[in-house]
Image (cartoon, rainbow, N blue to C red; front, top):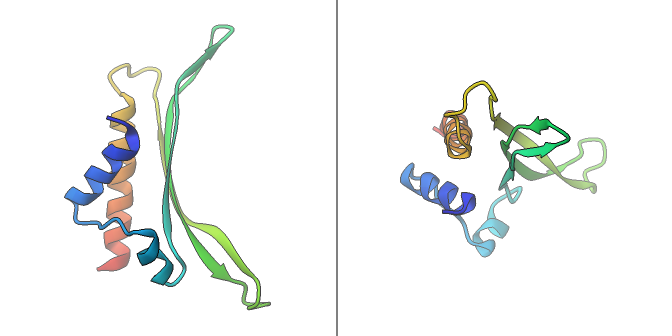
Length: 110
């Protein structure tokens, strides 16, 4: 299963609703959850571990000049491969990052 679909399923199971583009447009700040996966790479004998990162971006207004609106990251988390633990797979990292998001989301919204 592709990572994005897996993330969507995990969030639905936890009761976090995915919004349509029309619904997002109505939410102040138009918050967006971004998911990024970087696969393990090997070059010239050097291994770069895989990583999973999440961030929430939101439109913000500058206090100094309210006519300036920017899209910026308001929350982020990441998890990456530990090359000493070969049992830790990309889905483990994904689950760890989703768990962190859910914990922080619930803490901020309950």
